[in-house]
Image (cartoon, rainbow, N blue to C red):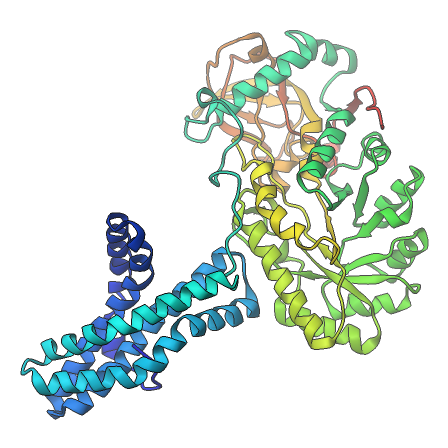
Length: 593
């Protein structure tokens, strides 16, 4: 097992790799039968099997080739090192990754923990094992048996010492444990068992919930009356829902300053309601900042999060009172030299993850090497760096990326602070909290439960801010449209609406989401008649909202509704074909207290 700079022969080294998954499965099965000893079986058996395989292969080969027991013992020891520590150190790295440790901190912590666990045992074993293997080779004629005898005898002392060292690292609190989420992670919402999605991703459990919600709000004929009064298409906004969502997120992330991302929905009535509730804001353009200024929101309640901006845009924001500016490259960093004293930079870190609906780090964010260089440049040129920011990606439907990004950012903060002797006091954890559209998404409570322990440890050390957009306003919007035409085509019935992908359903194109599309007749109990292709009104062949979508029987003039349409709908709509965006109807204003 153990420390050696001599690599195993290439054929021998690669021969053990297929054994590693088998070793892990065998270890898990044995562990389940051994009760308290199961932990040690899971921990050490995969490494042991990998090391043993290489020991036998290399030792036997050398003994046959040279006839020298000493050379065989040395070769076996070196080969066993490769197999054993290749798996053992990988196991420590995997443990720390599950705990959210990333970057250089992952390498440093894993090496320290591996050294603490195996170092004392290795110090004894480095002398004992070659001696025992040599003696066994002299005493036992069969080479393989001799090597196994020597190995078993020396293993007893090695694992006893290693196990005691592992317990010591746990008792000393050196091992970073994975944050515990409130329940299993997955695409779940808080529905009853009868409401869970069981129809191949069509979200019928969620669909029934949304139908009941809309029916309770509008009644059987409320949406038809709304269309009769205002026409269609419509985007119905309820500021009270946005404020309720904002406050819910505040309650789940205590101590975090929430800056609502204006880009998700910039309607003045919604912004005014949020401002009245004490919200802070994330702005990405001069127009957004000026809109808030017109509503009486002071600049010190804003953070400028667009990494790319002209000097004039940054100067105007600074004049308004904005003091935090996100950057991810040297050109933008140095623009801050022109701003008044007190303006500081947040270095945006990249965090790509395929589970996001939109990977924002494909366009923005500095990798760890670039971020280190930016901080060094800032220190050298006199730009004040407040801290770092990141964004896990839009509509991130998983818990792990939030935890991983947070750990990675904190590790980088620790590193650059030590290197440059500076103190960072702001951490921007971005947004990305998912919303249930056509199928259930990971509940917000499970994400925040995983983040809270880590964020709580930063209390008094850093100001933590977040930039929720979708999670605040998605539920506050409902799209209402009508069927303007139907057609029987070779692939079935098509229904054409007076709104589509170039209007309110632009979120299908820009955000890669699939909102629920419901017939208003469903709210009164009408059954689903069959799959329909639902298309928008433009002449573009791409303007198709959903294909093969279950709907009640549709006729020209029927009202169709989509809930959860407050985010990235009106703000990304266009006037393609000269069609104006849907008219906005705002429900009664929310009390601001």
